[in-house]
Amino acid sequence: MCIGEPMQVIEAGAMHARCRDRHGREHDIDLLLTGAQPAGSWLLTFLGAAREVIDARRAEAVRLALDALDAIARGEPADLDAAFADLLDQPPQLPDFLRGHRS
Image (cartoon, one colour):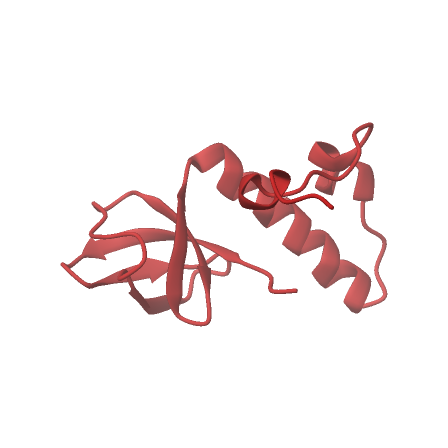
């Protein structure tokens, strides 16, 4: 399993963007999978590459979940119901590309 990190584009280029993570650190992110994105856009990134263009609402939801995981790793309490609200009261869903291939 990989964990994506939401980052906001602060300076855009054709194949790379300068992005800011949830801690305020800046990173050079590869845009080959998403194409060029304007400043202000949100990206879900993994290992230095943008994997998906997301909106601010999704970026905030991922940030809350990652902050909760960080708190748990430090041995601090975390509001898991708030951090993972999108997962409550619904069964896990297969990605679209797997839904048609059930055995």
